[in-house]
Image (cartoon, rainbow, N blue to C red; front, side, top):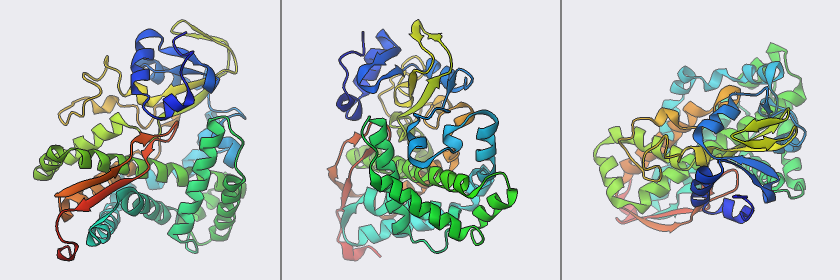
Length: 384
């Protein structure tokens, strides 16, 4: 079989050649190390995500559910709606536009502080803190600082990574969730969002905490990774950076292309609710079906020259970066805003950057460069 020799390490490092081979030879392939079917073509990935009756998230093996319990991420149908709807308002287009001034000012402050020293890790000093600051503002946890939010996020994401890779669940992830739950309980009466959710009366405290955890790590990982990846593309290609800096209308298509080329969440999991045939593959009831958003976004049948960053690409709307169907990402507008704001802030300070340690984009499920180091060519003291 096409997927019989593929390892988890292969999928975590540079999976794109593997996706191209699988898509051409066996777009629904059994991958032994994942104990899962892997779907790699754009149309088949969309088909699975739009069919929750056949391919569900509602399974006790779902990795996120094992870490934080049932939530909007791990339920379908009426239960999914009950969990998701109370949290939707802050992520709608209009509400996100209201966050634009805060987001852009925060991005500018973080970039300026990094540039002042003359060098820095743009993931650790800009992308991560920006995502945390925005989510902290949305969640409105008054007695929790950003460092504490970031520590919870890291531990929860690491736990999801471990479970997804078939490892034992680290106790640190469970401890982080318990601390987050305690903060949620303390802030039910003071947080505008949590107060609104509690007043709606459809969720109990445990359910509110599980969904806050989903929003926390989903909102941060999506935006932090997207911003770090965009920074990496800018730093490794000086000509591209100069082109975008000279025409800021290019920021939007640049962000869309980096989101397409390297979605921060590379895959989403579903479980077959019945025996089903998908593109000739005989999938048994209960089988794990992993939808590769990363592979779908580089399907040459949809995106010509799919591995090339093309600022003039016209069909960004076909990207599956934020998933599709009932579980399409709530943070789609937020991730785009944060990444665009960060790119503009970086170019506003000084486009004459020198790349430092540009770590590769890696990860089995959540993909991000470990570091995105940059140095400003000018004197740090000249940057106000």
